[in-house]
Amino acid sequence: MKTKLLQFRSQIPEPEDDISCTDSALCRFADDEEGSTVVLTLFVFIFMLVMAGLGIDLMRFEMERTHLQATLDSAVLAGAGAPAGSDAADIKAIVEDYFAKAEMSDYLHAMDIDGEGADDISTSLNATSVYAEASLEIDTYLMKISGVDTMSTTGAAAAEVRTPKLEVSLILDVSGSMSGTKLTNLKTAASEFVTTILDSSDPGDSVISIVPFSFGVTPPATMYDALTVNETHNYSTCLRFDSSDFSSAAIDPSVAYNQRIFTSVYGTFDNLDDWYRSCYTDDRHEILPYSTSETDLHAAINALSADGQTSGHLGIKWGAALLDPAFQSVATALQGTGEVDATLENVPSVYGESETLKIIVMMGDGSNTTTYQFTDSSSYRGPNSDLYLLEYQEMEFQYAFKERKKGVKISYSESKCSDPKWECVYEATGDVVSAYYLRDGSDYFDIEEYEWIDDGDYADIKASAGFIGETRLDWEQAWGLMSPDYFGDITGDWGPWNDYVGSGTVGGSTKDSRMSASCTATKTAGVIVYTIGYSISAGGNAETQLKACASSANHYYPTNGSGISSAFNSIASNVQNLRLTQ
Image (cartoon, rainbow, N blue to C red; front, side):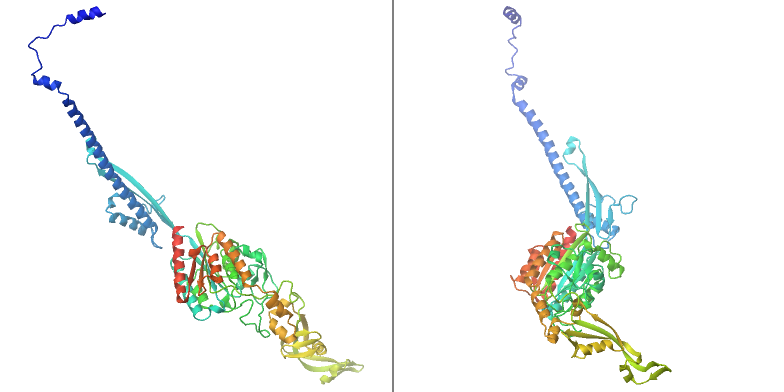
């Protein structure tokens, strides 16, 4: 192989002496390597130009696309948040106006508001939803080099603003310390709150209950009748709860509750209007349930009067119960009597329903104080009291007669009536009369005549011609006619007094514990609780209890004087904001 190669090379002719590239321009160009660098540089420049054009056009496109989407988002949010009463055409105009102000009207697709299928805009009493689409196309600058003349995009946005219905319990302290200017300021503030809430809602979307509390809370008779009650008298409608009842937010119509004894610490016979009453029977102290009427709510607030001591635990108990779904049957019963609007459905709603927001606003101006009551084991409860009711009718003597062999002998002398041989005829001349007698041993106190009679005189009354009957009242019936103070003053027996104002009292600390349990139960169920401390000491017990009851520290409002209006207005504003963020 090596020999052959040498032979092959030897056959190649040597170059002519006159052929040389030393001075040739073509040869110099051929030998010059810098030409390849120029070509490479030109290629890189063109590539970078294309990439820069791509970047610039993509950046322009992304800016326009982002602007389009932002306009879409803002427009549908504004449309969904249109004022109450806006129809689809109004909302469409709002969306179009947003695009017009952004100078992007040409990009917005036509919105369907009366098509056969699903419309882009839908409204209901408490919800508005809006859907919109838009598209744009831009001319490219440098991407044309790559053959891309235009770029396009389509965007879409949807928004829904759902304003939940409101169920509000407005729990107001009307104890004696609220009298005067404080009560006047409360009435103004509470009325403004009602107006603000109702004005910001579609008709029927906000239901407000007024719950006044002092010594107790008074449900109206129709509400009382819709509950299961161990009834012992017919004087009042207040209930007496056990400690365990406060661990639940509900007052369950299927559970039997005890009726509170109606009486007063002080008061004369059949005159128990003293402010120490165990239950206030006046209309102005009654709960106003589930009202949508601004007129009725204002009337109930303006009729409030201040009396008695403070029982915040009962205020929150009843306020929470009015929001608890267990009370639906009660609301239905009240619709049947016309006291609640028949158009309201499923009030109070079930907990956790997205369509409804439950709110408590509780105002108090002081600590819980003592309530008086008889103990469960009291000797002054149950049957066979010391109070007797006699009923008789005024009679007028007509004549006396007796049988004789020769016939009937008649006399017009009433003195004959004492002779057992004679029978006397009387005629009723008036209505049936009731008379009460309070027994002490063998003597009877004639309450109407305000004098004592012995058992003989009492027996004569029962034996008289007009006598109808005797009733020995139960103690619960007796206490509805007389106070423990009156009983002790007449009989000298102060046992009922000592039981009522001593052994059976419910003190402030016990009420605090019960109030705390009730607040916890209703907050756990999902109710939002606002509290207002009106002219109370900072850091005192009243503020401590109200703060603890509130849903958070920010849900408690300390205030005084006319500033109570600002507190209620702030709460109303917060409630409106809550509705928009649900």
